[in-house]
Every structure is written in C-alpha cells, then in structure tokens.
Length: 198
Image (cartoon, rainbow, N blue to C red; front, side):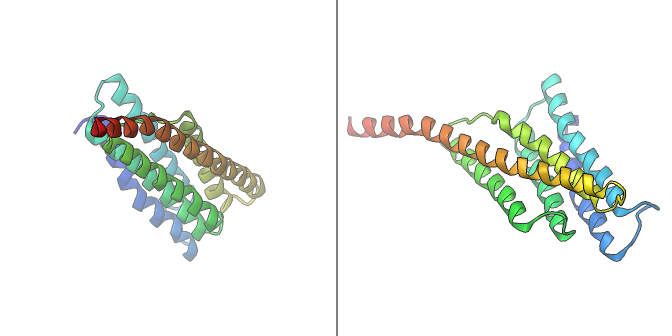
C-alpha cells in the first residue's frame, strides 16, 4: 500500500476514535487530562489534514490508484458524517440540517456511481472543495464551542454560519452535478436509441 492510501486508511481508523472521544463528554470524563472536545477537535483536525495530504502526495508522486479513488471519498464522508452526527448528540447542530447534508452526500455519490457505470465521468465540482473547507470550519468551531466557555458564543455562531454556508454550497453543487449528468447523459441515450432504430 502506498503512502497516500495509507493516510486515507488512517483517516478511516480515526473516525471511531473521534466518536468515542466526543461522546465521553456526556459523562464528564477527561481524555489524557484534557477535555474531550479539545482532544476530539485535534483528532478531527489531524484527520482533515490527511485528506489534503493524501491527495497532494498522490498527485505529486503519481500514485493515484483505483483503490485510492474509491476509499478517499468514502473516508471523507465517514469522517464528516460521524463528526456531524456527534454534534447532533452534543446538541450543537440541528438534526435536520445534518440529515440534509449527509443525504446530499449519498445522493451525489449515487449519481456519480450511476454516471461511471454508464461510462460518464463527472468531474468534481469546484464548490465541493469550498463545501469541504466550510465543513471543517463548522465542525471544529462547534466542537470547541461546547467546551470553551470564554469564546463559546463566538465559536458557536461562527460554526452555525459556516454550517449554513455548507448547506447552501451542498445544494448548489448537488444541482450542478445533476445538471451536468443530464447534459452528458441525454445525448448518449439519444445516440443509443438511434443505433437501435438504425
């Protein structure tokens, strides 16, 4: 296994650790002498950095593999979904907003899988990167807002604003994916019908 894929796998293994650490706050426990939120934020930050690092290394070393193309987006979705669901449990995020964001992820993933099965490649939307950065900001701010008494209000409202921005970019980018799929798929379907008729 090459280094980029190893980093991706590491990100996947960090997901259950993140959830366990964050949810210990219900029992008032500390982790290594630190508040669970601090440790959880650190774990999430490290995991998010591996997302940037694995992509950068894969491109620089020309180590882009079919395995990496499958597990990298899977790791991203597992990480953000686990963190967002944990925030709902911590009462720092609305369940319906989180459900909307996660539902969008699965819908776009299903669409791109369908397109790939038909031989259609839909490039990643530029808004996807913006959405990912906004998710990281929102999640980190809301995790820390749960513990940081002095900055709680600032962190909370920063996190909420970023989360709403995630919702907007998620919906706009999803619409863009479906539009590009329809534009690309429609001529192919027509071509197949013409061939059958001919």
